[in-house]
Image: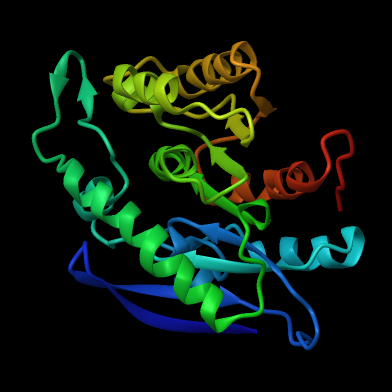
Length: 262
C-alpha cells in the first residue's frame, strides 16, 4: 500500500510531494528506509513522467521475501518542469563545450538537499517505525538525480549506501571530482549502473555515460571505497532498464558477495 503527503520545505520555500510504499503487515517490525529521487518514477507507471516507473514496490517485496530484509520506500517527487528539476538536482554549475549553462541555479539544489536531511528524513522517522541510524538508510537516483544522490551521500552523514544509475557526472566533471576529493568516505558503499547503449545529446560523445561511469568506478577503487559497477550490454537511458538492475542494487546494499535475482 502507498501513502502520500505534501511537506513544506522551509529552505526551498515550497511544498514537495512524498510517496511512501508500505507493506500491509507492519506491526512489531522496524524497517530500513530507501529514499528515491525523481519519486514520481519510483512506484507506479501512472505517476511516471514518461509512462514507465522502475516499479520499485516489487523489488522491496522481493527483498522481504527472499532476503528477509524489510524496507520502506520513500519517493520524493521532483520539481516537475525540466528547468525546475535541473536546478533541484544540480549542486554545481553545469558546463558543456567549455561554456556554462546560464539557467542553472545551484542554490536551489543546495537548499533542497538541506531540506532533505533536516525536514524529510526526520518527518519519515517520526511517523514510521524505522531505524534512525545511517546504516539503515539508503538513497537512489538516476541520471542527473544520481549526482544529487552522491552529493547527499557524501555531503551529509545520513546514508550508508548510494545507488547512482546512469550518472551524469560529465555535466560538471571538475567540480564533481573536487567535491569527492574533499568528502570521500570509505564507510560509504556505492552501486553504479550504466547501459552501453545510453546516449547523450550532440554536445557530448555518445559513449559519455559508459566512459564516465567506468571512470567513476576507478576513482572509488583508487580511494579504497567499496563500489560495484553493473554494465548492461543493451541498456538505454530509461526506467525500464533501471528497473532491470534494481534488484542488483538491493542485493549490494546487504550482500557484497551474493547477488539475489528473480
